[in-house]
Length: 286
Image 1: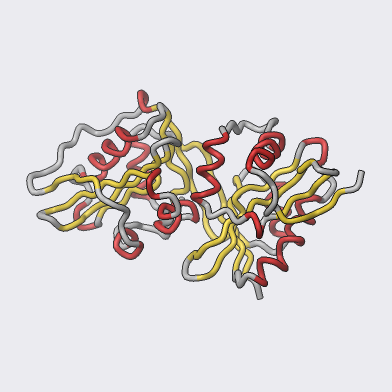
Image 2: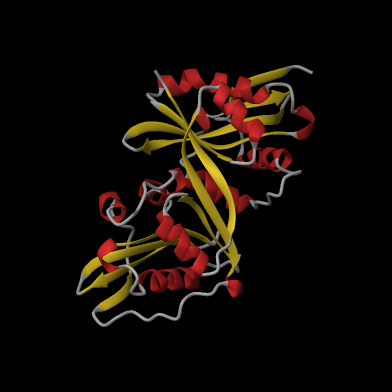
C-alpha cells in the first residue's frame, strides 16, 4: 500500500460523498448527498485548499477546508475530517494537516479553526499537539417538533413579525450575546441565501429581533432579541415562525455559547434537551 497526498480540486462530489460516508459509517452520523452539499456550501468549502490521502485512486482520508473571514481575520475552517476505518491509526490526519498548511499560508490565511466534541479526548489531544488551542465551549440541541413546549405567549401590541432578507452582520450581531460560530455567521448564510428563511420582529417599524432557519436541514441557525425587549414573547414568536418553515420533523440548534445563559435557558424551557457539547479550537499562524 502506497498512500499519496494531493489537493481535492479534481475530485468529483460523488467521490467526496462516498469517502465521507465510509469515514463515518461506524459513527452515529447519517447525512444525505444533499445535506453534505448544503453543509459544504454554507461552510465555504474550498477544494483547492483541501487535501486527501489516496490509496491508488481511492480517497481514504480527507480534510475538507472552508475559507472566509472570522472575527476579522482570513480563516480556514475544518469542515470535516475523516478516515476510513481500515486506514486509521496510521497518522494520516496529522499528515493531512501538515500537507494543508503551506497552501493555506500562501493563500493568506491567518488562522485555522475547527470544532470537536468535548468527549472526543483522542481528537482533542491530537489537535493540541498540532498547535490548536481551545477558545470557546458550545452547546447543541436537537428535538422533534412534536416534543417541543413553546410558552403560550403572544406578541404585544406594537410588535410584528415579517419575512425579510438576511440582515447585515453588524445589525444582527448587535442583538446577540456572543459571536456566532463559523457556520452561523451572516457571511455563511449569504453563501447560499435561498436555502434560509429570515424573520424579523419590529417594534413600531424598528427591528428588535431576528431569526434565521435553514429549510431542508431543520437548523435553527440564528435567534437574537434586543436586550431591551426580552422576556415579552419575541423569542417565542420568532422560534415558532422558524419552526413553521423548516421541512423536517426534527429541529436542531447547533453551537450556542455555553455561557449564553439566557439563550440556553430559553431553549430548555421550549423543550430542547442538551444534546452535547463542543469545543471551538484555533491555531494562529505566525
